Image (cartoon, rainbow, N blue to C red; front, side, top):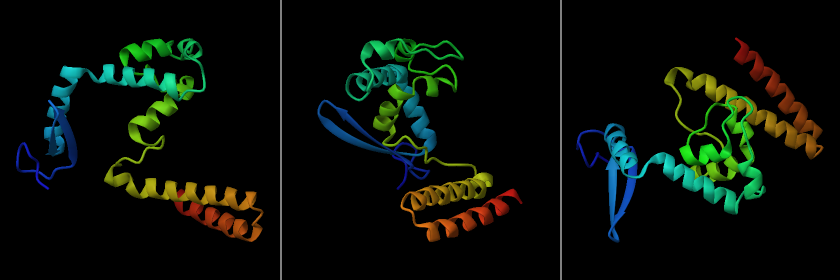
Amino acid sequence: MVCNICGKNQATVHLTEIIDEQITELHLCEECAQKKGAQMESHFGLSDLLAGLADLGTQFNSPKTKTETSKLKCPKCGLTYEDFKKVGRLGCGECYNAFREALVPLLKRIHGSTQHYGKSPKKMAKVVKAKNDLQELKDRLQKAIQKEDFEEAAKLRDKIKEQEKKNNK
């Protein structure tokens, strides 16, 4: 599918706009999508959107009460959860751990998952795949141990050792 704006590049981003109850679908290339994203952010503000979604997360999905989440503070950068809701951006990498209970439902609602499955550089594709395969084997090993399927666990252990040797080379 070709980009609706430039008509040249392959469309990789698909947007649905609803204006005055009329639905318009846009199929955009990455370059046009970035331009469109900048326009949308200037109209609505991405930080406002994230802050609004953060508010919803604390109301419906978070096990902590609203007063407990408002007291959360990052030990590294000092950002409070209330500041995050206002700005829509985290202060540092440690904020993810500090605000974990409130962020997990928010991230799950926004992205559909709490695990990142995005693109990686072509040079790193083999490394990332090997790492993911190794983690999958380790997960399967834990499940086999829990089920007390020790024959399967031994096979998986051997595969893990073999995979780790390959990865170290």
